[in-house]
Image (cartoon, rainbow, N blue to C red; front, side, top):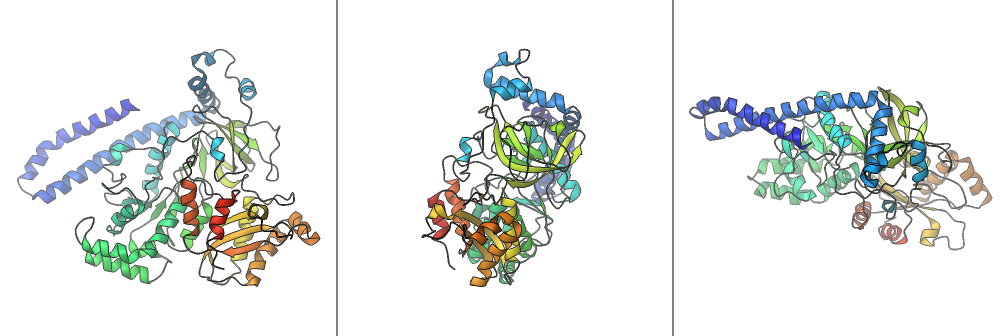
Length: 537
């Protein structure tokens, strides 16, 4: 890594030296401002050429590893074991899969994901990753994004509005030259948003995750006037009263299509997929980011990047499972459950159309962890599976032995909200009644908290629709409801900012992971009570 960065820097210096005479000649004829602009454009062109060269080299590496998947996975396994157990593990037979599975039994995901699951996962070092997979996801993702949406990465064309980046691998250079680094002094979301709002020519809007971007737009509507005054006064640069007036006018017209009113040339929103993001993407697409494409360069877990997205034009994220480190196995899924003794598959053994739970092993903790993330194989890239994220097994509700999984519940909730006139779902969370001691002698049930746009009050008829949709989706749940063993789901409307407060509470936990996987089932009373205190209807 260090060697190729040095080579890139040397190449840039050589190009600048070659162009120095031309620059000196131009300096005698044009103003200082024009010279600075010319130099900035030159730096951008050189940096982009260098990045394309590095991406081409990583593309060749990816072709090699995905054609020789067995060898690539064996090397990844050996690398993990050598880093943890020392070079002696490379002796004959020490990295055989049977030996590996015997030495490292599967670790089950925690049933309390919002605070405790990171005890089972490799601890994150920072909000970005090291390793070839993360570097390939960043370099190849940038090139693919520029190919799918020309000029989005032109000078001044991108802005990140969150402290975290959607690109898994840090690029101090050429990222700073290409304007992917944060502006100087902008260390929080509000400062980053202010910088973005001053630039009407943005073509790509970036955020760490979709739920973070949801919070950004919600905050923009609350603090819109304050931000407009800062832009007009020039708190972060020259005063821009005309731009401040444009911001005020855009906000007056409401949430729907706000991003395109603020940035008419905007083409794509870039966020990192990390589980639990689909609802936020749907809300953004229906309201603030209506008419825009979404792109996630990678699928990430606490242990590292597990999937690369090489297809920005696809409306739903498709990910190539990387055959390198961290080491990935696939556990077959049967009816949203998994057998404890079921053998895991390697990447070459994946079957198209089948669903698998991801199993991850890396060198940091050497924990062979079942992530709980379920993917479906939809194709292949050379000999590696291409997958689509489906749901998470640890986000399951059960009060009487029934198994209401994340996918089933989300579909039922979406169907119910579709019957609530004018309502748009922004976020939701579920709690089993025993967590809140809310049964009061009645049958156990689900407590459901929702944040909506377009609906300020929930009638009893609307609340009942969710329970009807759940019964249609699950015969087992319907049978329990018919016998009275399970009570009707209780739906509560929470006020704006309730789930933002929940995310703040989750991120303040010392064991909080990156990227933040948004829990839909809360299993800790104080977190459930946080939402309970925000109920408005």
